[in-house]
Length: 356
View 1 (cartoon, one colour):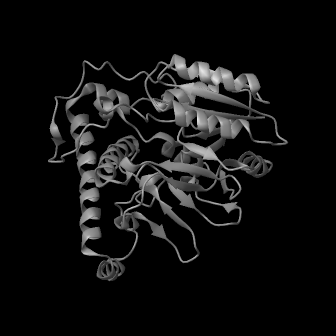
View 2 (cartoon, rainbow, N blue to C red):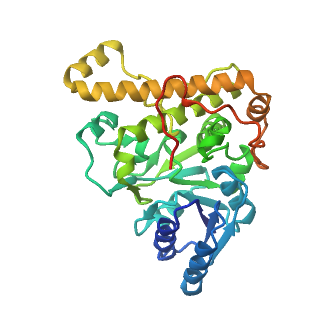
């Protein structure tokens, strides 16, 4: 059995679209759907109950008052009847056959982690400079980590676990328990210093254990990209948060560092150069100057986020203790009274506005 888990916070309309798309799936493998509401919205609860009354499969609304995406994800583990957990973001809709694609990959008992395409639904015209943040490969595969979009081609294949992204992330329940669960993620802005590396930690643990991860092109979701995500400010804020996540990862690493190759965290290591210096110089010759400037600003935001978290580690016992936790199954974030002082542009000159 597969348990589809849809954590959500403050997006009832899109969460219902995600739920309806899953409830309409037809699959030979039995499945259930959990809507895990970090906002405990009574109106969303009633809407989910209405969908449940007409659905052909079990649909359950689960309030999760403990703040943080990781808490909603972990509540799904506790509530799930399935031996596979298929996590979806609340701003995606699944393409018909998504669930069958996942089930086909998990029919191989050696496969522990599965993902698929995340294709865009643009709600506004994409600006030309967005191309500066895409990776496009000669084999036709591509991704844009900052917008959680990815297509690894038309054929199923084994992949690096870090190419299984949180918007479309399916894992065997026993494997998730074995690796210690998710790390903190999805925290409000004022608690950003307690942010962790989310599902990236799970992917890294799966990789270290030598377990197989599979890409299924049939397991496709369509990811909403609203107008506000097509602005430079969004890319900078996202990069700043990814800097925090990278600092968290480095601080938990036994050698105090973290692998530098591309990952599937929020910004997908957009800011770590893979190419040689010669290749980078060649690229700069063909990339418009405006795009280069935007990429530099985003890279600076990432560095500012990393430095911000390192500073918090030095000055806050609460952050130090949080980072050193063995796991986050009981992931209550420390009291908000232990907050850093307000900083206009954070501590590093970044003019980042608090997210709405």
